Image (cartoon, rainbow, N blue to C red; front, top):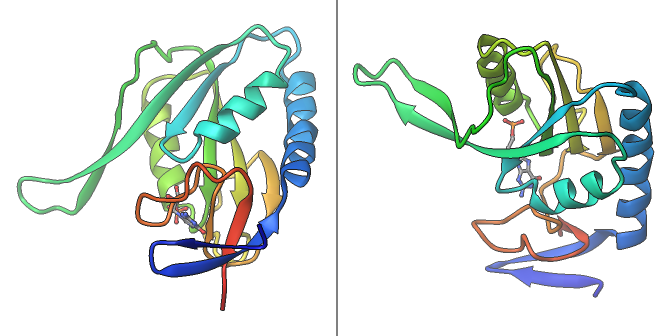
Length: 178
Ligand code: 5GP
């Protein structure tokens, strides 16, 4: 479909299944090479990563472990601002080579928080694999190691990404119509 409606908004098709698959195969190949002889732990960040993680991991030929976390924010008791927490971590990360799987890196605030939390957990190395990166919006200095697609600073849905909870199950990527 060329256009879809999600709640009150209209989105137009942006990337088809073939383009998505090709971009994922490219980064999977790089990861397979970079981690040869290692046993990385892939850590998917839910909810948005679920389709990307499934497709990326099917292309990974390494011995590896896979786990998923959610990022939760809560207000400190004395309103010191938002503190992020990783929920669902079921593995020790000590001395592990961790590859974070993200759906999208926009300003980089979320990924910076996650990397900070993982660093405290004593990982041997931390790298980031993201389906999408918005270079114009990205404001952090942390290297985003594996990027399937760079996109303009526009709102997208589908392929795991939602608009107000909807649209995650759409198998192609759509962009908000101006
Ligand atoms: P950041 O912390 O990098 O600014 O933003 C990360 C989060 O914002 C993503 O995990 C995602 O939930 C949301 N986000 C940023 N850009 C988009 C977008 O274009 N579409 C959707 N659906 N979510 C986005």
